[in-house]
Image 1 (tube, rainbow, N blue to C red):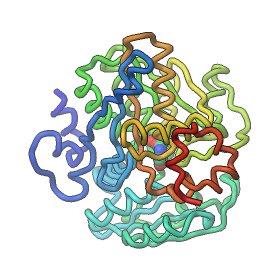
Image 2: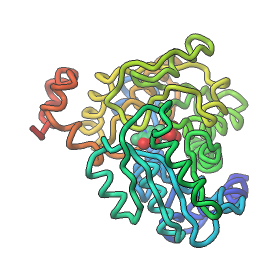
Image 3: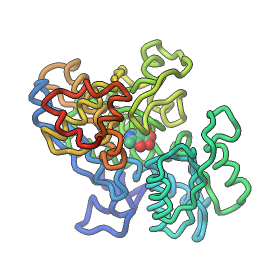
Length: 360
Ligand SMILES: Cc1ncc(COP(=O)(O)O)c(C=O)c1O
Protein backbone atom coordinates (compact mmCIF):
# COMPACT_ATOMS: atom_id res chain seq x y z
CA UNK A 1 0.00 0.00 0.00
CA UNK A 2 2.71 2.40 1.07
CA UNK A 3 4.92 1.49 -1.88
CA UNK A 4 2.20 1.84 -4.45
CA UNK A 5 1.03 5.14 -2.92
CA UNK A 6 4.56 6.48 -3.16
CA UNK A 7 5.14 5.20 -6.67
CA UNK A 8 1.93 6.46 -8.10
CA UNK A 9 2.67 10.17 -8.17
CA UNK A 10 6.29 11.00 -7.35
CA UNK A 11 8.25 7.99 -8.56
CA UNK A 12 11.68 9.55 -8.15
CA UNK A 13 11.05 10.14 -4.45
CA UNK A 14 10.09 6.53 -3.78
CA UNK A 15 13.10 4.78 -5.21
CA UNK A 16 15.18 4.91 -2.05
CA UNK A 17 12.38 3.26 -0.12
CA UNK A 18 12.42 0.04 -2.05
CA UNK A 19 15.96 -0.66 -3.24
CA UNK A 20 19.51 -0.52 -1.99
CA UNK A 21 20.73 2.09 -4.41
CA UNK A 22 19.27 5.32 -5.75
CA UNK A 23 19.83 7.27 -8.94
CA UNK A 24 21.34 10.74 -8.86
CA UNK A 25 20.42 13.72 -6.68
CA UNK A 26 16.68 13.29 -7.08
CA UNK A 27 16.85 9.60 -6.17
CA UNK A 28 18.51 10.55 -2.88
CA UNK A 29 15.75 12.97 -1.82
CA UNK A 30 13.58 11.72 1.02
CA UNK A 31 13.65 8.46 2.99
CA UNK A 32 15.30 10.25 5.93
CA UNK A 33 15.66 8.75 9.43
CA UNK A 34 13.23 9.55 12.24
CA UNK A 35 15.40 10.34 15.25
CA UNK A 36 14.25 9.54 18.80
CA UNK A 37 15.43 12.45 20.98
CA UNK A 38 16.16 10.51 24.16
CA UNK A 39 17.23 13.17 26.69
CA UNK A 40 14.45 15.56 25.74
CA UNK A 41 11.90 12.74 25.68
CA UNK A 42 12.87 11.63 29.17
CA UNK A 43 12.56 15.19 30.43
CA UNK A 44 8.90 15.39 29.46
CA UNK A 45 8.07 11.72 30.02
CA UNK A 46 6.97 11.30 26.41
CA UNK A 47 8.57 10.22 23.12
CA UNK A 48 9.81 13.04 20.89
CA UNK A 49 10.87 12.23 17.33
CA UNK A 50 12.59 14.49 14.78
CA UNK A 51 12.46 13.73 11.05
CA UNK A 52 16.03 14.26 9.85
CA UNK A 53 15.26 16.41 6.80
CA UNK A 54 18.70 18.02 7.04
CA UNK A 55 19.94 14.72 5.58
CA UNK A 56 18.37 15.41 2.20
CA UNK A 57 21.10 15.78 -0.46
CA UNK A 58 20.61 19.55 -0.79
CA UNK A 59 20.59 19.87 3.01
CA UNK A 60 16.97 20.72 3.80
CA UNK A 61 13.32 19.73 3.89
CA UNK A 62 12.82 21.91 0.80
CA UNK A 63 14.51 19.35 -1.49
CA UNK A 64 11.23 17.43 -1.36
CA UNK A 65 9.18 20.48 -2.33
CA UNK A 66 11.61 21.38 -5.15
CA UNK A 67 11.45 17.88 -6.59
CA UNK A 68 7.67 17.69 -6.19
CA UNK A 69 7.12 21.06 -7.92
CA UNK A 70 9.33 20.15 -10.87
CA UNK A 71 7.98 16.60 -11.21
CA UNK A 72 4.43 17.94 -11.19
CA UNK A 73 5.22 20.46 -13.95
CA UNK A 74 6.77 17.68 -16.03
CA UNK A 75 3.67 15.53 -15.58
CA UNK A 76 1.43 18.40 -16.65
CA UNK A 77 3.58 18.82 -19.78
CA UNK A 78 4.63 22.34 -18.77
CA UNK A 79 8.32 21.52 -18.61
CA UNK A 80 10.27 19.65 -21.28
CA UNK A 81 13.99 19.00 -21.80
CA UNK A 82 15.92 22.27 -21.94
CA UNK A 83 13.19 24.17 -20.07
CA UNK A 84 13.57 26.91 -17.45
CA UNK A 85 12.53 26.86 -13.79
CA UNK A 86 12.02 30.22 -12.08
CA UNK A 87 11.30 30.96 -8.41
CA UNK A 88 11.37 33.90 -6.04
CA UNK A 89 13.18 32.58 -2.97
CA UNK A 90 15.83 33.65 -0.54
CA UNK A 91 16.61 30.28 0.83
CA UNK A 92 16.38 26.53 0.86
CA UNK A 93 13.83 26.15 -1.95
CA UNK A 94 16.18 27.91 -4.36
CA UNK A 95 19.00 25.62 -3.33
CA UNK A 96 16.78 22.53 -3.80
CA UNK A 97 15.55 23.77 -7.18
CA UNK A 98 19.09 24.55 -8.35
CA UNK A 99 20.20 20.99 -7.50
CA UNK A 100 17.18 19.33 -9.13
CA UNK A 101 17.63 21.49 -12.25
CA UNK A 102 21.21 20.28 -12.65
CA UNK A 103 20.07 16.68 -12.25
CA UNK A 104 17.23 17.08 -14.75
CA UNK A 105 18.99 19.42 -17.21
CA UNK A 106 16.89 22.57 -16.71
CA UNK A 107 18.00 26.18 -16.45
CA UNK A 108 17.33 27.60 -12.97
CA UNK A 109 16.60 31.31 -12.43
CA UNK A 110 16.25 32.69 -8.90
CA UNK A 111 14.96 36.12 -7.86
CA UNK A 112 15.82 37.17 -4.31
CA UNK A 113 16.05 40.36 -2.22
CA UNK A 114 19.50 41.96 -2.47
CA UNK A 115 19.65 42.06 1.34
CA UNK A 116 20.48 38.35 1.44
CA UNK A 117 23.96 37.20 2.42
CA UNK A 118 26.72 36.95 -0.17
CA UNK A 119 27.13 33.26 0.78
CA UNK A 120 23.57 32.46 -0.33
CA UNK A 121 23.94 34.26 -3.65
CA UNK A 122 27.30 32.62 -4.26
CA UNK A 123 26.01 29.14 -3.37
CA UNK A 124 23.14 29.44 -5.85
CA UNK A 125 25.56 30.58 -8.54
CA UNK A 126 27.89 27.68 -7.73
CA UNK A 127 24.92 25.36 -8.24
CA UNK A 128 24.52 26.82 -11.71
CA UNK A 129 21.54 29.12 -11.06
CA UNK A 130 21.13 32.53 -12.67
CA UNK A 131 20.57 34.88 -9.70
CA UNK A 132 18.71 38.19 -9.82
CA UNK A 133 19.32 40.03 -6.54
CA UNK A 134 16.69 42.80 -6.62
CA UNK A 135 15.81 45.64 -4.20
CA UNK A 136 13.98 44.35 -1.09
CA UNK A 137 10.44 45.74 -1.19
CA UNK A 138 7.18 44.58 0.41
CA UNK A 139 4.97 41.87 -1.13
CA UNK A 140 2.35 44.52 -1.98
CA UNK A 141 4.88 46.30 -4.23
CA UNK A 142 4.84 45.00 -7.86
CA UNK A 143 8.66 45.03 -7.78
CA UNK A 144 8.74 42.43 -4.98
CA UNK A 145 11.01 39.51 -5.96
CA UNK A 146 8.09 37.04 -6.11
CA UNK A 147 6.18 39.16 -8.62
CA UNK A 148 9.33 39.71 -10.66
CA UNK A 149 9.84 35.92 -10.88
CA UNK A 150 6.29 35.48 -12.15
CA UNK A 151 6.67 38.27 -14.72
CA UNK A 152 9.96 36.84 -15.94
CA UNK A 153 8.31 33.50 -16.72
CA UNK A 154 5.42 35.18 -18.51
CA UNK A 155 7.97 36.91 -20.77
CA UNK A 156 9.77 33.62 -21.48
CA UNK A 157 6.56 32.03 -22.74
CA UNK A 158 6.49 28.25 -23.23
CA UNK A 159 8.68 25.58 -21.61
CA UNK A 160 9.29 27.75 -18.55
CA UNK A 161 7.60 27.53 -15.17
CA UNK A 162 7.26 29.70 -12.09
CA UNK A 163 7.22 27.06 -9.36
CA UNK A 164 5.20 29.34 -7.03
CA UNK A 165 6.07 27.40 -3.88
CA UNK A 166 3.63 29.29 -1.63
CA UNK A 167 0.45 28.69 -3.58
CA UNK A 168 1.23 25.72 -5.80
CA UNK A 169 -0.11 22.75 -3.84
CA UNK A 170 2.24 20.33 -5.61
CA UNK A 171 4.51 21.46 -2.74
CA UNK A 172 2.24 19.99 -0.02
CA UNK A 173 1.47 17.03 -2.25
CA UNK A 174 5.16 16.00 -2.25
CA UNK A 175 4.99 15.77 1.55
CA UNK A 176 1.63 13.98 1.43
CA UNK A 177 3.15 11.35 -0.82
CA UNK A 178 6.53 10.94 0.86
CA UNK A 179 7.22 12.59 4.25
CA UNK A 180 3.82 11.68 5.71
CA UNK A 181 3.93 7.98 4.69
CA UNK A 182 7.54 7.71 5.87
CA UNK A 183 6.65 9.04 9.36
CA UNK A 184 3.60 6.78 9.49
CA UNK A 185 5.73 3.73 8.62
CA UNK A 186 8.55 4.73 10.98
CA UNK A 187 6.17 5.12 13.93
CA UNK A 188 4.07 2.12 12.86
CA UNK A 189 1.10 4.44 12.90
CA UNK A 190 1.44 4.95 16.65
CA UNK A 191 1.65 8.73 16.88
CA UNK A 192 -0.42 11.08 19.05
CA UNK A 193 0.74 14.38 17.61
CA UNK A 194 2.60 16.05 14.78
CA UNK A 195 3.67 19.69 14.96
CA UNK A 196 5.81 22.02 12.86
CA UNK A 197 6.18 25.66 11.87
CA UNK A 198 5.26 26.87 8.40
CA UNK A 199 6.80 29.00 5.70
CA UNK A 200 4.87 28.03 2.60
CA UNK A 201 2.89 25.55 4.72
CA UNK A 202 3.82 22.69 2.39
CA UNK A 203 5.34 20.48 5.08
CA UNK A 204 2.61 20.95 7.69
CA UNK A 205 -0.15 20.57 5.12
CA UNK A 206 1.23 17.50 3.34
CA UNK A 207 2.43 15.60 6.40
CA UNK A 208 -0.52 16.77 8.49
CA UNK A 209 -3.14 15.75 5.95
CA UNK A 210 -1.60 12.31 5.45
CA UNK A 211 -1.27 11.55 9.17
CA UNK A 212 -4.71 12.96 9.98
CA UNK A 213 -6.39 10.89 7.27
CA UNK A 214 -4.40 7.71 7.83
CA UNK A 215 -4.97 7.78 11.62
CA UNK A 216 -8.63 8.71 11.15
CA UNK A 217 -8.05 11.84 13.21
CA UNK A 218 -6.21 10.09 16.07
CA UNK A 219 -2.93 11.88 15.31
CA UNK A 220 -3.46 15.52 16.26
CA UNK A 221 -1.94 18.12 13.95
CA UNK A 222 -0.61 21.32 15.56
CA UNK A 223 0.92 24.44 14.07
CA UNK A 224 3.97 26.12 15.63
CA UNK A 225 4.58 29.81 14.98
CA UNK A 226 7.53 32.18 15.53
CA UNK A 227 7.17 35.85 16.55
CA UNK A 228 6.20 38.07 13.61
CA UNK A 229 3.85 35.48 12.10
CA UNK A 230 0.06 35.76 12.13
CA UNK A 231 -0.93 32.09 12.02
CA UNK A 232 -0.98 31.48 15.78
CA UNK A 233 -3.42 34.35 16.30
CA UNK A 234 -5.39 33.16 13.25
CA UNK A 235 -5.88 29.72 14.82
CA UNK A 236 -6.53 31.11 18.32
CA UNK A 237 -9.10 33.63 17.08
CA UNK A 238 -10.93 31.06 14.97
CA UNK A 239 -9.87 32.57 11.67
CA UNK A 240 -9.12 36.31 11.96
CA UNK A 241 -6.11 37.56 10.01
CA UNK A 242 -4.31 40.46 11.67
CA UNK A 243 -1.56 42.76 10.38
CA UNK A 244 1.90 41.25 10.55
CA UNK A 245 4.20 42.89 13.11
CA UNK A 246 7.56 42.16 14.74
CA UNK A 247 10.07 39.58 13.63
CA UNK A 248 12.08 36.52 14.53
CA UNK A 249 15.64 35.25 14.21
CA UNK A 250 14.27 32.05 12.64
CA UNK A 251 14.53 31.86 8.84
CA UNK A 252 12.21 30.19 6.34
CA UNK A 253 9.21 30.21 8.68
CA UNK A 254 6.52 32.70 9.73
CA UNK A 255 3.78 33.94 7.47
CA UNK A 256 1.44 36.90 7.00
CA UNK A 257 -1.33 35.10 5.10
CA UNK A 258 -2.99 31.73 4.50
CA UNK A 259 -1.17 30.37 1.49
CA UNK A 260 -2.90 27.80 -0.75
CA UNK A 261 -0.71 25.11 0.82
CA UNK A 262 -1.60 26.10 4.39
CA UNK A 263 -5.21 26.38 3.29
CA UNK A 264 -5.36 22.62 2.73
CA UNK A 265 -4.73 21.83 6.44
CA UNK A 266 -5.72 24.86 8.52
CA UNK A 267 -9.26 23.63 9.29
CA UNK A 268 -7.87 20.32 10.56
CA UNK A 269 -5.30 21.66 13.04
CA UNK A 270 -6.16 20.96 16.66
CA UNK A 271 -4.28 24.02 17.92
CA UNK A 272 -1.23 26.22 17.65
CA UNK A 273 1.79 27.11 19.76
CA UNK A 274 3.66 30.43 19.77
CA UNK A 275 7.36 29.85 20.39
CA UNK A 276 9.54 32.80 21.47
CA UNK A 277 13.02 33.23 19.97
CA UNK A 278 14.57 32.83 23.45
CA UNK A 279 13.28 29.25 23.60
CA UNK A 280 14.32 28.42 20.03
CA UNK A 281 17.89 29.68 20.39
CA UNK A 282 18.37 28.00 23.74
CA UNK A 283 17.09 24.69 22.31
CA UNK A 284 19.49 25.04 19.37
CA UNK A 285 22.44 25.03 21.78
CA UNK A 286 20.88 22.32 23.92
CA UNK A 287 20.35 19.98 20.98
CA UNK A 288 24.01 20.41 20.13
CA UNK A 289 25.04 19.70 23.71
CA UNK A 290 22.77 16.74 24.47
CA UNK A 291 22.35 15.07 21.06
CA UNK A 292 25.21 16.30 18.85
CA UNK A 293 22.66 17.57 16.32
CA UNK A 294 23.76 20.83 14.67
CA UNK A 295 20.43 22.31 13.60
CA UNK A 296 19.02 25.62 12.39
CA UNK A 297 16.61 27.75 14.39
CA UNK A 298 13.41 26.52 12.69
CA UNK A 299 14.29 22.92 13.65
CA UNK A 300 14.96 24.03 17.22
CA UNK A 301 11.64 25.87 17.37
CA UNK A 302 9.95 22.69 16.13
CA UNK A 303 11.57 20.62 18.90
CA UNK A 304 10.42 23.12 21.57
CA UNK A 305 6.92 22.90 20.11
CA UNK A 306 7.02 19.08 20.07
CA UNK A 307 7.95 19.03 23.77
CA UNK A 308 5.19 21.51 24.64
CA UNK A 309 2.67 19.50 22.64
CA UNK A 310 3.78 16.25 24.34
CA UNK A 311 3.14 17.91 27.72
CA UNK A 312 -0.32 18.94 26.59
CA UNK A 313 -1.09 15.43 25.30
CA UNK A 314 0.10 13.84 28.55
CA UNK A 315 2.77 11.48 29.85
CA UNK A 316 3.67 8.65 27.49
CA UNK A 317 2.46 10.53 24.40
CA UNK A 318 4.34 10.21 21.11
CA UNK A 319 5.00 13.36 19.09
CA UNK A 320 6.93 13.93 15.85
CA UNK A 321 8.32 17.06 14.25
CA UNK A 322 10.64 18.17 11.45
CA UNK A 323 14.38 18.85 11.70
CA UNK A 324 14.39 21.17 8.66
CA UNK A 325 18.06 21.95 8.06
CA UNK A 326 21.48 22.26 9.68
CA UNK A 327 23.00 25.32 11.35
CA UNK A 328 25.76 25.64 8.74
CA UNK A 329 23.88 28.20 6.63
CA UNK A 330 23.34 30.48 9.63
CA UNK A 331 26.37 29.84 11.81
CA UNK A 332 28.05 33.23 11.35
CA UNK A 333 25.06 34.75 13.16
CA UNK A 334 23.72 32.05 15.48
CA UNK A 335 27.13 31.37 17.05
CA UNK A 336 28.30 35.00 17.18
CA UNK A 337 28.28 36.65 20.62
CA UNK A 338 28.01 40.11 19.09
CA UNK A 339 24.99 39.12 16.99
CA UNK A 340 23.29 37.40 19.92
CA UNK A 341 23.85 40.50 22.06
CA UNK A 342 22.41 42.75 19.35
CA UNK A 343 19.30 40.55 19.25
CA UNK A 344 19.08 40.53 23.06
CA UNK A 345 19.38 36.73 23.07
CA UNK A 346 22.78 36.12 24.67
CA UNK A 347 21.24 35.74 28.15
CA UNK A 348 18.67 33.25 26.83
CA UNK A 349 21.47 30.70 26.48
CA UNK A 350 22.08 28.92 29.80
CA UNK A 351 25.48 29.35 31.47
CA UNK A 352 26.64 25.77 30.79
CA UNK A 353 25.94 26.19 27.04
CA UNK A 354 27.71 29.54 26.64
CA UNK A 355 30.91 27.69 25.67
CA UNK A 356 29.35 26.99 22.26
CA UNK A 357 29.27 30.70 21.39
CA UNK A 358 32.65 30.51 19.72
CA UNK A 359 32.42 33.41 17.25
CA UNK A 360 32.97 37.03 18.27
C1 LIG B 1 14.84 26.26 7.32
C2 LIG B 1 13.40 26.11 6.98
N1 LIG B 1 12.58 25.62 7.91
C3 LIG B 1 11.24 25.48 7.67
C4 LIG B 1 10.70 25.85 6.45
C5 LIG B 1 9.20 25.75 6.26
O1 LIG B 1 8.79 24.76 5.38
P1 LIG B 1 7.46 24.93 4.53
O2 LIG B 1 7.76 25.93 3.45
O3 LIG B 1 7.20 23.58 4.00
O4 LIG B 1 6.37 25.43 5.42
C6 LIG B 1 11.53 26.37 5.46
C7 LIG B 1 10.98 26.80 4.18
O5 LIG B 1 11.64 27.39 3.34
C8 LIG B 1 12.92 26.48 5.72
O6 LIG B 1 13.77 26.97 4.80
